[in-house]
Length: 507
Image 1 (cartoon, rainbow, N blue to C red):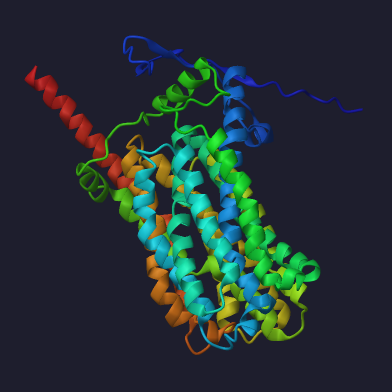
Image 2: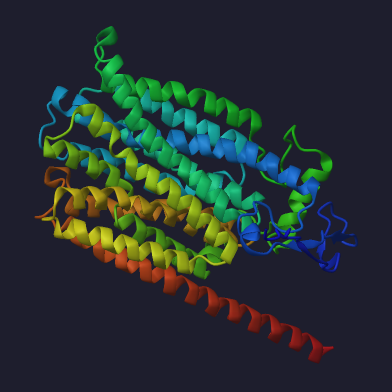
């Protein structure tokens, strides 16, 4: 019988004192003690959840972070996407027929007004979170947009939907950049990819759950108290949001510098600040007019805003909606099936986000991951561009297009990592990403993806133009951003060397 060998982790002792890092209690002379590092060979190291050498105490800190900040972040984003996607499910479940919307572009305009709200709210909402504690700001915004979601059940005219969808988008704009900003304040660079992916996955689950919820309501609640099932959807969405907002108010830990969370002890609060400082991301900067110079004079704002805009122009986030319209257009499926089948896109998205986030963290770079996913998206969009292919091929292209979603956590984690400790710049760039993205989509959606041309969009060349943006997105994230990062990193190192040399000569 062959012998089985036990793999023993290799202990690699690093210097225990980092002279550059300091305690965060204002005692600069007190050095930070770093734990010894452990390297795990093979698959053991790849699938390890914590960084090698993490102490038991720090693992307990990370567990608390994962439980409280990540659980609230996931629940918040779940509600956000539940509320973003509900009009599509309502549309497919009788709303358009009940209200006489017919073949027009009312659904497209509902999306457009929602995007307009996000466009205006994004940057400002994420600046507010740098001065107002996240545990107050994020739950407040959730309750605000949820109240407007509740009002949707009373709507009978398209204009009423447009106004409410604008308000929903305005307050929802705080969710994604605000949560990404708080994750970047707590987690290390090597931890961000996985956590960002899990957070964004919750939005995918929200999209999926909206379909399942509408199917259940159509079967069990249609006609109750004189309300159609699609109206009940908005009521149930509001009811689900209330406990999540209360949970956030009670348990969100704010930031390492401001936290008063009851579940942290003093050592954990100090260690949370030290972890970020050891990576050179100790908070600095302030909210004043220099913010605009710090932001627009940096490469990050252009790299990531362009990347997120290209991702938005693929209209990947609307693929579930287009798939719903395609299923309805075929006449082959019942209303519960029309609401349920598009959730398969979410299942693909779930797997892709987990795997790509994990891989990006472990290999320490995001560009190769973006390249592989981009090439797969090119295949999907090519099928949809041709369109005159068998029904099964179109079903495959729609469902497999769920891989698009991993670009969101990859870009957000990348931005959090490269913006360092400038909290306001990091917040503003993340906010601009979610603002410019919807801004460029507003005219594009109306011109290229109007609801009246769904699902083929042949006359407007919707899928073909989206394919062009997929190619641009792939090249930008796999080649363009890494080139910018490398160039400006070398430039900073050269400037620092020149400054040090000048000081030595002067001395």
